[in-house]
Length: 219
Image (tube, rainbow, N blue to C red; front, side):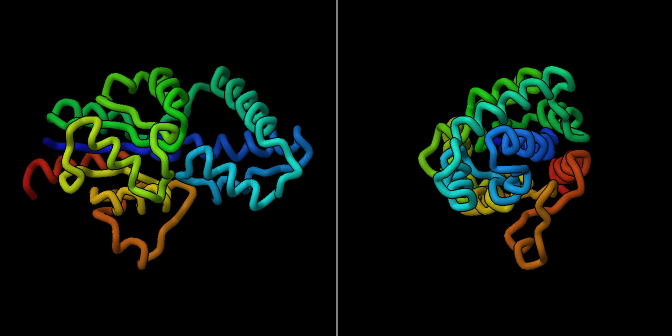
């Protein structure tokens, strides 16, 4: 079975940049100032781990629940007006994988309900056989739990599966789980030492489609 597991934020959708604006807005609203810079400390982490790194930065003197409410207020308004920003090449890649016998799943640190909402709003939900959000596993990326859970959900052998990721934490999680990590950089850029764990490093999802075409042709 041919298997590809997708991350979501920063990989399928250009949402990490939206989160920068959302956290700037939310930070101002709750009195801690613009906090969009926290995106670089939060990439690939689930909600519990995000709370932990925010506590490390801001201490206990702010209301994280209020931060979440204001963040969601911004995001709901943004997506209602603009839609979810889809990464270049996503639909072409998904269509190719679907037409060529690949089984696909999503392994995102975002809450499952929010992942499903984003997939449905972009018409990409039909391509995925399983969705595993960060609330479905005990340990966040960079631990391998979410990728192992995604493989289990679709009956895939991790060593024969590919993982499409943009973040350091996500790529490490995929590597630890035994998948073949493919990096498509977004906000975070890797270096030559980190690249040693990668199966491939590509420019965008159109290049990912070409990679799978090459794999399928045996070249």
